[in-house]
Image (cartoon, rainbow, N blue to C red; front, side, top):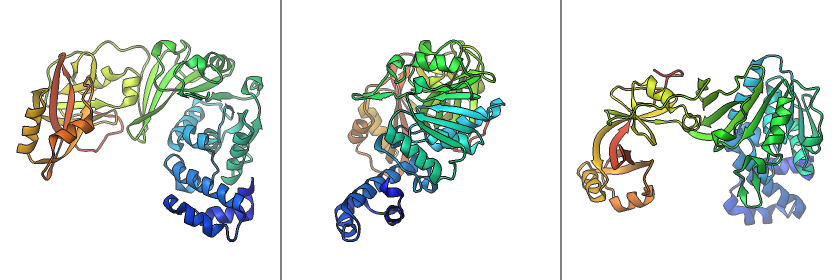
Amino acid sequence: MALRTPEGAALLDELRSYDPSQELATATRLRRTHPAALVSAALGQARLRQRAVAKFGAEDAYRMFFTPNGVEQATRTSVATHRARRFAEAGGVRSVADLCCGIGGDAIAFARAGIRVLAVDRDPLTAEVARANATALGLADLIEVRCADVTEVDTSAYDAVFVDPARRGGRGRIFDPEAYSPPLSWATGAALRAPRAALKIAPGIPHEAIPERAEAEWISDGGDVKEAVLWFGEGFTAGSYRATVLPAGAALWSAAPLPAPPVGPVGRYLYEPDGAVIRAHLVADVVARCDGRLIDGTIAYVTSDRPYVSPYASGYEITDQLPFHMKKLKALLREREVGVLTVKKRGSAVEPEELRRRMKLRGPNAATVFLTRVAGAPTMLIGHPLAEERSPTGC
C-alpha cells in the first residue's frame, strides 16, 4: 500500500485539512513533486478520512485507512465500544472471532477492551486495510487479520464470536435477513456453537425474525438508531428485549413483551420516545415511568400531566391542540411571531419542508409542531422542548 510509505504518510499529513472543493488545484500542485498515482490515492484517502471523523473521531480517523464501503458500513466507535464492553462484562471473554470484520472498527474496540481478536474478511483489500488499521493504532499484537471465507473458519478456540453480515447488495440495502451475506440462519448457527456470541443486524428487523434463543438489543447514538444486535450464550437472556441509548449508556430491558399501554387525552406534556425504545417495543415502559398514556393506539407519542426527564424520551410542553388545518396553524404562528419552526410528524402524510414553506415564517420566536393523530383524528400539537438535562436512569 503506497500510502503507508514515508512519502505517502507525509502526503496524507499534508492533506489532513485540505478543502475538497479545491481538489483540482491541490492535485495540480502536488503532482509537481509526487507521482500522479500517489497523489490520486492520497486525495481519495483524505476524503474518506474526513468522512470517517464522524464515526471514529479525528484522532483515530486521521491515522486509519478506509475504503468507500468501509466508511459507509463500519460501526461507529461509540457503538463498537459499547458492544465490546458488554462482551467484557459478560465474564470470561478473553478472545473473539470477528467474522466479516470489514476495515476493523469492531476489532479495534475489542482489542482496546483487552480482548484478543481474530478478524476475518474474504475481500483481500478490506482485510489489508483492517491489518493496516490495527498497526496504525498500535493494536497489531492483539488483532490477527485473516483473509478467508468466514463460513470456513474454525472458531472453536475463541471465547466468543461476533458476526457482522453484509447487508448491502448491488441494489442497496438488503432487508431480508436470509439475503445477508452470510445469511442470518448461518450466523445464528455459528453463534449457537460458541459460548457467547453477538450478531449485528439491521434495526428494522421484524421481531418475528428474531431467533428465540437470542437477546435482542437496539442501540441509538445521539438520537439516531444505529443498529440492532442479537446476543447469545452465557450472560444474556434469551427472548428479552433491550433498548440502549448512547452516549448516556442508559438501557431499558424487558424479559417478555410488554402489555399495550393505555390511551387517553393529550396532557400538558408530550414525550417522543427514543428510536431504540420504539424499535424494541418498550414504549409501554416509558408510559409507566411518566405516569402517562399514548395519544393514539397506533402512534408512539406519550403524553402525561407531569414533567419527565430521562434519556429514553425527548419532552415537550404543549401549549395548543388543534384539528389539522393549515390556515389556522399559519395564523397562530404569525400571531406568536414564530420565525423558527421545528416540524415533527407521526401518522401524517404532510412533509415538514412543505409545511414550513407554506407557513411563511417571520419573527424572533421558535416553536415545535407535531403533525399526528389523536384518537384517530388528524391533529396539530404546538409546544416547545423541555430542559435538555437528562438523568441517566430517568424519573
